[in-house]
Image (cartoon, rainbow, N blue to C red):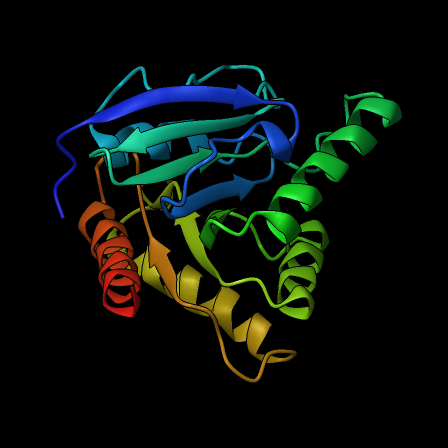
Length: 203
């Protein structure tokens, strides 16, 4: 798949404010500072599309980007950022849960994991919750270029997935990416294209 057009559409504080159409949505979420905005910009080859920041946790709204006028990338707030007040944190958690559980247009949630770190409880708990809630999701490992060559990155990803195997019967799809090197771009976009094709066939 090639992305020819990507545009920001709307920032929403509540799920009810999201676009009122039936285009499929692919949402991206992860802990603060996981490289979510950089990944979205890399996928779209549109440097300033999602706002990147040196300060973690700047995404506080549900951001919709229309792709090729056919489907949406949705940038969700990061979870687990400790410097927010408990009130703000709770509000964000409610917003994220509401979108994930209630948004019928959501066809896949990409959970971003920094490949440099061992499995963190906050991530594995979130992934477990998605499984228990029956949400279709995939894992995207980010920052693969930061740990050396592709062989090392793949080894780290396999190790992470092996940890999930301890509690999961069937593992979700996963992708190894680097925003700086555009690594994994084709694989992620081909995966999205495959789902879109299935949805069209169902219609």
